[in-house]
Image 1 (cartoon, rainbow, N blue to C red):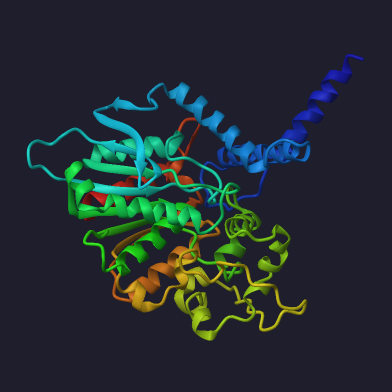
Image 2 (cartoon, rainbow, N blue to C red):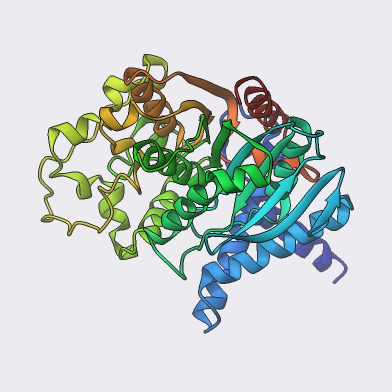
Length: 415
């Protein structure tokens, strides 16, 4: 009988190790830390889906509640963040811009007549998760405001399942127009020639789309001078790019999960996932549109590797009904024409080698450059999706710290 507890403990240990372990590329540093982080996310997703099956809220709502609790724990452990007021000289205020909730970070006043930088930020989370007011995003924007003497506005756009495209985009566009108005820039002493739009992942998608629209709007006197896109998601047509295939099982963003995020955002049936993974949904697009996501022409050989393009000329299972918004450049900025890209502001694009979205960012950089836009590509060979936001205990990664510093340094020198 004494042997039983030992056997049970051993079996549980093996089971946990099996659940946590995920094969990772050798180049990824601190692999077990990433495995633990991924296991925590997967557990949250599994439990949230179970709660939804048992009749609780939508699983995304449960995931949000769980991650908010995790953020709160991390804040308590660090003991350095607050929900508002002044921290390290940065004044934090929650308000609305054109009816959209935002959080404004103001650095210490620089004296009479002193103008400051301005930055509009959209958080990531697959258009379904995340908040600029909590955790890593809040810390990032406080740091940016303090170090770069910048007025940062983080936008709390509406999320799935409450809304679908184009509502999150429209929220971000409305907040951008308000932020760029002469009245608001005068209120916050912002230099109208030094205003950026930035975002990571789905937020990078929104930042690119908003930058395009603002650049085309001749009724607006205020424009963005730069755009900073951190591992952005930018296209809906090809889920078989080299990075999607190479990194389809690399945490923390799996290929199937990214497709689900897209289907949710566009209000589509999730049963279409297998069709999208096989590129059947893009079998009838025009050659002109296909050229805008043609990674065989847009990527360098080192990123193409030995992968071959998957172009479905005609679906063997019949045409998949077109998803509303799939070809809309407001949802997929990489599909914009060269005449649109030529008007866009200077760009900083951060990409990670072990990220399914790597090629989205690299293709967009190439197309912007071909249109005459100055682009800085900051590529991290050991990077994985989301790494820039993992810079605090217990999930702090060296590559994340370097990526964060690279982002801040670029803004310091270019904004």
